[in-house]
Image (cartoon, rainbow, N blue to C red; front, top):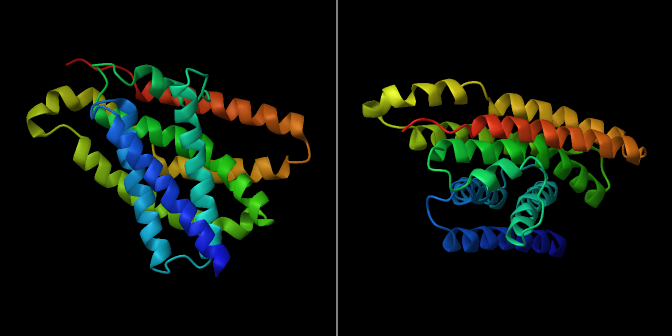
Amino acid sequence: MAQCEQFTTAVDAVISRMRALDAGLPQADGVAVFNRVYLTVTEAVDRHIDGGRFTDARAAITLDVRFAERYLAAVRTAQDEGRPPACWRPLFQMRRHPGVRPLQFALAGINAHIGHDLALAVVDACLSLDCAPADLEDEFDRVGDLLVSLEERIREDLMPGPDLLQIADPLTHLLGSWSLERARDATWSAARTLWALRRLPDVAEEFTERLDGAVGFAGRMLLTPLPE
């Protein structure tokens, strides 16, 4: 029980860091837009853990924390004027561009975090828990289901209203080419591949770099500036 409480405190800690980040950023900043979305997701996961919705609470907490740590590390690197992973660079570079809509910022962040960070977080969690990805599949699926349901709400909340439909046409076309559900499926395959490659560090590093670059490329497409 003490061990579970320790992990719960870690979830509270990452939520606190996201709230502090939200308080310190302008509302229209692209990173702030994604951070609000991710904070909502993390709070929802935390409620599900507290409510006993996960079969293995310790595994769910570990995955949630390792996942969040990768995003927070990217933010810290950018704040220190370092070079974050390629998957995050488009969001940090375009965060103040007036031609990028809030929905684009939100989905570009989700793309980076799901497409790259989640696969690595699964491996991180497996190493922490001394288990294989298959042992975390239920927790992975439950978190993924939450994300998919929240993505629908995010699109509804951030999509321009009916009076802007003409302007929204290119936005609808652009964002319709990306699916969180497909990204989640690809991430699970990437996590299993990375786990299988863990004893081949050179190959694993090359795979990770290519994954990072591919996700970053998709992020750049999602952040294409649109006409006012």
